[in-house]
Length: 213
Image (cartoon, rainbow, N blue to C red; front, top):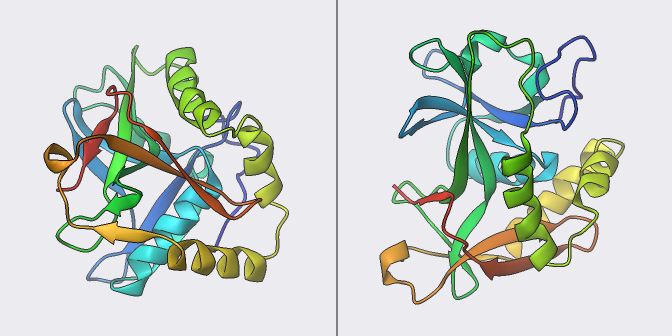
């Protein structure tokens, strides 16, 4: 299910990111992307296990999904609509209310993502910048997940069976709700710790876009 990154690709090299691939109606693999305020952007996960949880959940009631390193996909997919820079929608966590993940009408998880846009004409590199990294790290530090980068790297050495079973247990241990963000007294961000097999919920800080459309 999980493919390791290709060492020859420079994008997201310093801090690896991961994307979801799904099969379309014609049986071809497509990259999962979102329509953002700055145009369509590939959704990137900084934790391979977050991507695996999404893939496992989506595959329960829909087409096949796979996880792939963002460094392995065509660089042109990260071009913004004006082709004047690079854009990615970074998955921060899952929006939640009272300890339950918000669910879209389709049954998919809602997502809390932040658009990362680098204004430059075809820059030679595209990496997670300091502002994005600070936001992402802040949520994990609030949950006590200070070593999240090491945990993400460790997952790459786990067997496929271990990963699949862990994803099943993660999904079985979380509740979903059809509530909308506006109906919640306090929107939370749900995070999962794969090493201790535990969900954490921290207050939503407001910068990322928490969508359940």
